[in-house]
View 1 (cartoon, one colour):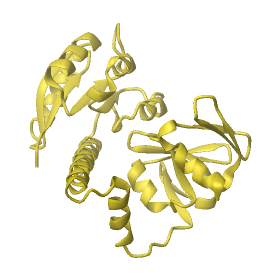
View 2 (cartoon, one colour):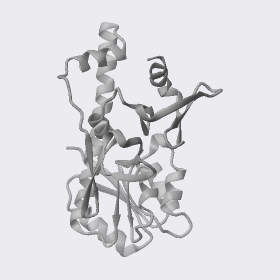
View 3 (tube, one colour):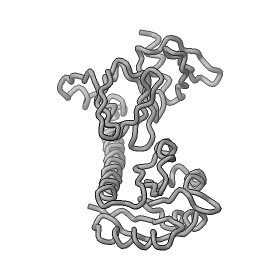
Amino acid sequence: MNTLNTIIVDDENLARRGLAIRLEQMPAINVVAQCSNGIEALKAITEYSPDLVFLDIQMPGMDGFDVISRLQTDNMPMIIFVTAFNEYALKAFRVHAVDYVLKPIDDEHLHDAIERAINHHQREESARSKEKLVEMVMGITGASAHSIEQMAADSQPVKTWPEKLSIKDGSEIQFIKVDDIQWVDAAGDYMCVQVEGKTHIMRITMKQLEAMLNPDVFLRIHRSTIVNANRIIAAQTLNNGEYMLTLEGDSQLKVSRSYRDKIKHLLAS
C-alpha cells in the first residue's frame, strides 16, 4: 500500500509535535511538513502536493476554512479537520472534509480518521484506473464510454433496493424510509440526507449511498447532489440550459449542465 504524504497545520506547537509523533508510528502516513499558520500551509501544499492535511480550524490570521477557500480544486488534498470546537462540524462536511476530530484526539478516532482517508484515497485511485481502462477499450473497439459501462452493468445480477436507511446519531440509530428522502447533498465522506425539512448526517460516501438507491428513482443532478424523482413537482428551463427543480415543500434545486440529460429523460418519460 502506498503511503499518504501528509501535512500537519496547527498554531499550537505541542499539538503539532504530539500529532506528528503519533502519525510517525503509522506505516500508511508520511509526514512531509508541519505548519503553524495558514500562509505556511498554502506554501507547503503548493510545494509538496500532499495526499492528506490535518488542518486546525481556529488559527490567527487565516483559519482553516480560509486555507480551503484559497486552494485550487484540482490541487485539493484530503482534509481532516482537527479542532477543540465541535460547532464547525457541519461546515467542515460541506467543504468535503474526509473527517472531523476533536481535541484531545483519542487513538480510536485518529485511527478511524486515517482509515477513512486511506479508503477515500483508494477509491479515487480505483476511479482513475477505471477511466484509463475505459479509454483503452474505447481505443481498441471504437465503442463509446456509455456503451462500455452499459455492457458492464448488463452483466451484473438484478439488484433489490432497501426500503429504509439506518443513520447513527450519537448513541441512537434512526431508521428513515427511502421513499421519504427528498434529496441528498454530499459533504466529503458524509451525506446530508434531507427528509421533510430535517437534515440527517450520514457517514457514507456518495458512491456508497448511490449503490444503495434505485437509480431509476434517485437521480444525480450535480456532482454532489442526488434527488428523489418522485418528489419533483415542477421543472423550469433556465437561460443557460440548466434546470431548476421544485420539490414537494417548495425546496428548489438546480440541475448542473453536466447532468441535465437525466432530467430531460425524466421529463420525456
